[in-house]
Structure formats: structure tokens, C-alpha cells
Image (cartoon, rainbow, N blue to C red):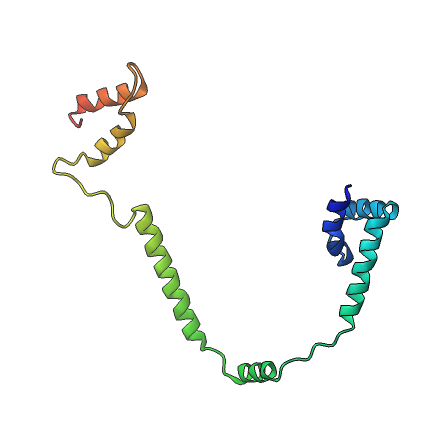
Amino acid sequence: MKCGEVQEHLSAWLDGEVPEGLHQRLADHVAGCPACRAELEAMERLDAALAGLEVPVPRSLADKVKRRLSRPAASPWLQSLALAVCLALGIFLGSSLTGRLYPWPASANGITNDVASLEIFQDYPQGSVGGAFSYQGEEDGSA
């Protein structure tokens, strides 16, 4: 491994967040590289110094938590209503996007779907499936 790649993973290695295979490769590299070992030792010192700091909790945070805990929970029926509305809206939007609620409008002679399906064979070569499909439509009188 190269030093740059090792140094990218040192923080994760200190936190125990690297897979076993990578852990061993990092350990092997650090054992033989004084620069990476020094970087690791500096990170360990920084980690120990930060762990020793005590961070005061703001008074406002404690007040907010107490207010939130004392507030009554939302009514179960209101949650059920919100879920039902979201579900209905999702079904409506999903079906309207796929065209299931609003089918293709029928034309005067009722061949809108046939014409739409023939458009995919618009530039078909002689003797192809598109030609056979088109010929069948002519026999039926629908094309």
C-alpha cells in the first residue's frame, strides 16, 4: 500500500471501522513505515486529548427535551388518517402516471390503440414482422 492510501484509512482504522483484510494491510504498512507510524501516533494523541474534554450541554437543550417529553403524543386516529391520505394520494398519482385511471381516448372509429401500436413499426423493412402486422390490419379493415 502507498502512504497516501494508508493515511486516508488511519482515522477509520483507529475507530475500528475497517474490514479485517484492510486492517491487516494497514498494520503491515504502519509497522514498516516511520512516516505513517508517526501519523498514526499523532492521531492517537489527538483522539486521547479529545476524549478527555468535557462538553457542557446547553441549558436550552435540556429545556427543549423536557418540553417535548411533557407534550402529549399525537392521536393514533390522526396518524391513521394521515397514512390513509398518503396512501390514497400515492395510488392516485401512481395510476394516473401509468394511465390506468385515464385510458386512451377512443377515436371516432375506435382504432386509436391500433394506430398507436403501428407507430412502432413505422420504418419496417420489407418482409418483416411490422409488414405482417400491417397487412393483417388491412385484412381486418382496422388499418
